[in-house]
Amino acid sequence: MRTESKAEALRRLKYAQGHLNGIVSMVEQEKYCVDVLKQLFAVRKSLEKVETVLLEGHLNTCVVEGIQAGKQDEVFKELLEVYGTARR
Image (cartoon, rainbow, N blue to C red; front, side, top):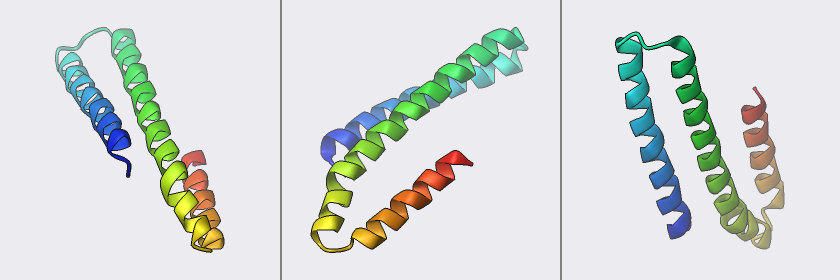
């Protein structure tokens, strides 16, 4: 994993973690459901951004290296597997 991808992913994950802690407090305090849902949507978007950062990093490093090493079948199989998991 590239250093900048790791740093960006960790930054976004820590943000989402803090946000989730806030949502837990909101639920414990019985805050208005729509407000909780809005915060959950924000966390989901944040996690989607982490996915994008990680996928871009993977495509630009591991996938390229795997293809250059002649492992394109393995690389494509893995990408299809990840794509399938994401669609579930």
